[in-house]
Image (cartoon, rainbow, N blue to C red; front, side):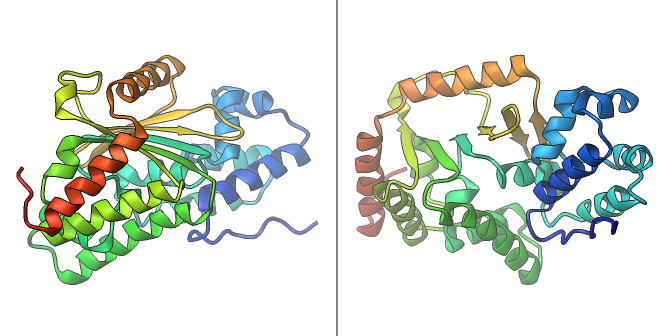
Length: 280
């Protein structure tokens, strides 16, 4: 029987590798728990690998090839997938995002990457890397906009974004860029592709004063949360931690303006930018 083909790292790589792992495990007649035992991981961890919600690291790939007799397939593809187009601290989260059925995100200072326009993304990337060559900025922006194709599907994933009022009041890239960016978010909301709320300054102290937060749900795997700081990020699967973060998001939902009020505010602020009446 011919072995599995090496995967194309550009086409949903983690999901493809996870599917191949499931097929190879089932061919070997092993349960998820039985495969996990010699790796000293749980069956649920194997389930996350197969669902594409966790990255297969090299040390596991080598052992899996030995256990399943896959002739170095998982090691080869693990090495290929390590060459991610995303920054190291965000790569695993971006790959999980691509297979999520629901994404819930609180954005403290910026419009989330999945909702950014080209001009807004360019302004953000240039601010992060003021001395980078234009080609590097162009590549960063192209990668960010490529992620947004997740929203080309009319229903999946569900995206529920809560924007802090600071994210819509700070004029990233100037008034014209902000007007376009807010109109884009409002248009997605009006077309019922996303749910968006604004957490107003008037809400005062809230459950996520520490920073932004992203929660992801999956069809065949437990949920994950992702927290990020400059050049650092961590994907978390501990049930207690994910549960706390889910509660935090629920509290933010309760404190935020309703979707209808939020849409009206987004469009009002966009109009202010267009007319030069914005006050930060």
